Length: 253
View 1 (tube, helix red, strand yellow):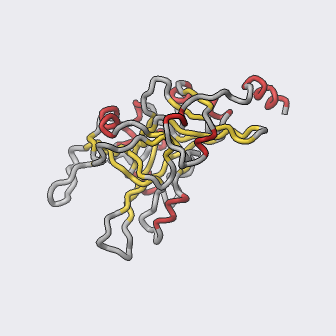
View 2: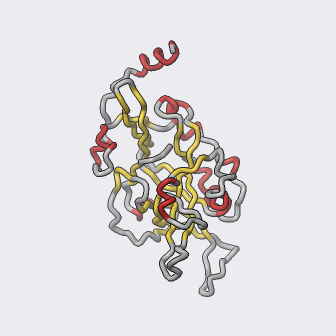
View 3: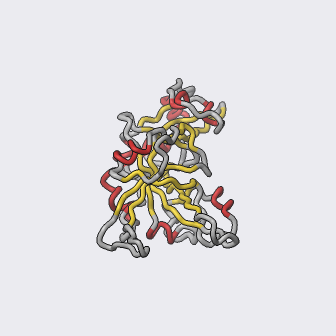
């Protein structure tokens, strides 16, 4: 699953990296080393621009960086708190689930991340890892988004929320956790964001190319507490488990 990640780059830098316009309105948006559900997070979307009458221009699309709340609230929800349980959507079932199927057809996004955290269960507890690109480039987590309006407050501003797609872990990631976010390679960004493309089944499988390029970095358990939020959370620590011994014990069992 994906329940915590880091997003530390300035919106202007993210907009440049993803060839988007910065529409966050947050020039001084603070780096977040411990992004948790219900926070407002930077996302990349691509939509048809609308004219003054609200009509979309079907001949053009515009890519922009926007803030959304992490935890998708379906249009039909009566209470936005349902989003607290919908931070992730399984890639294997997302096209059939009532809460997600409309969004995955027409409202997809990317969530830029420095990397994400996952916890490996060991005999002595849980060891957190940070999965990241060694060259410092952002990972593009596949996401879907939705707009919710409070039926009891018609004049209230709409709430825009998102979920991260997850899939079965592959390669070395499977040694840490059985699930992983769906991280899209650069070559898939355009197809995933295309607002006119409804069928994205071929993009829902994890990329071995992306996984093989990741660094799996053991980090401090300080990340377990969401109140901790500094660059020290990304610092590597010694892995308490010898990976060779771990493989041998797993094969023996």
